[in-house]
Amino acid sequence: MSKTSPLTLDEFPIPSYADWKAEAEATLKGAPFEKKLITRTFEGLDIQPIYRKEDLEGLKHLGSLPGEAPYVRGTHANSNAWNISQDCPCAPGVDPLTKLVRGTLETSLEAAFDELAKADAIAVNTRLYHNAGGNAVQELAFGLATGVEYLRQAEKHGVSIEEAAKKITFGFAIGADFFMGIAKLRTARLLWSKIVAASGGSAEAQKMRIHGSTSVWNKSKLDPYVNMLRNTTEAFSAVAGGVDSLYVGPFDEVVRTPDEFSKRIALNTQTILAEECHFDHVVDPSGGSYYVETLTSQLADAAWAIFQQIEKAGGMVKAIEAGIPQKQVKAVAAKKAEAVAQRRLSLIGVNVYANATEKPLEGSLPENKPCGCTCGGHAPVAPKVETLEVSRGAEPFEKLRAAVSAARLPTARTVAMPSSSISAIPAES
Image (cartoon, rainbow, N blue to C red):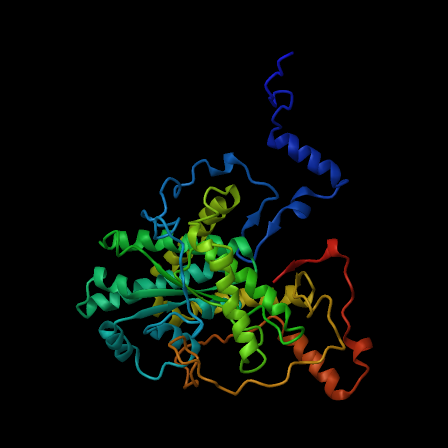
């Protein structure tokens, strides 16, 4: 009986990146590689079509384990469990600067900072910047700058950096870009650890506590059941990124006061991720991914650059008073709105695959409904600075559909969006 030779892959040489790129360019039939295969994000980052081990060379954040500073891989060594928090999308605690930017701060900043220093819980809710149309780099930079402002104000009132840092919970909204959401949370922990360490905080104080919530910006009143799918991928992204607690929005929360069915679906989304998928046992599942590690590093560099700009402006209070964060967020929001209008950024059921004959959900939202938390959702007061408002990419299309319906025009002919082949659909948001 003859012996079988051991199986090897020596006959298959490992191609170089140049070899791969040459083959890829050949399939493009003259179209520019950079235009067809490199994606430019709203953060200003270029996403490559392929990532390799070589891309990890020189990345400074690699090497730590889960539960070890700088906590890019999570603050726990052996668990990825999170708290299911369906009561409120915002991180709990005193958060005067978010209220200031939202235009709902009812006291002076001095009084608000006095309250902050006495509070048991402090919040940094960056979800306002996200839901006003901002990008991940802005959320990180403005969130970090706000956290630093709160540390300084607490220290002025006699509260140590060690004590104040342990009181802070950061609130991040998770959007449609699955891997961007994961990398954003990893980057947030990395940079916050760096900041607290530089301020003299212990390894325990350097741990960032993160409350995640699904996005509002990409939700729609049109074809609202698609919101379930959006929330599911966003929740998965948040869990993979290592949130400490998570709020999943009911699919009808932008339409009406959520009913029992939508609230149950939102709750069960988290329950399935934990109890059936067992993601609570998988720590940093994207760790080591060439793409995610590279994206984490890119976000860190970009966010740190804007953070330093805020510091040079005199800190977050001075920056807000000068309108720096507000103007930057509004500039990105305008680009997103243009992309949705031109169908370069798709919203399923809104600007692609619209169902012009659908029956809208019954019910409506009360005006100025308070959200019962400190994220700035209460009734507005006279604004002290330029403000930001929560917005949604689908709103112009919703208004168009409503106007056509009110005019009793032939809806199907008038507002039906042109169909696209599956291969031509732009990125979903």
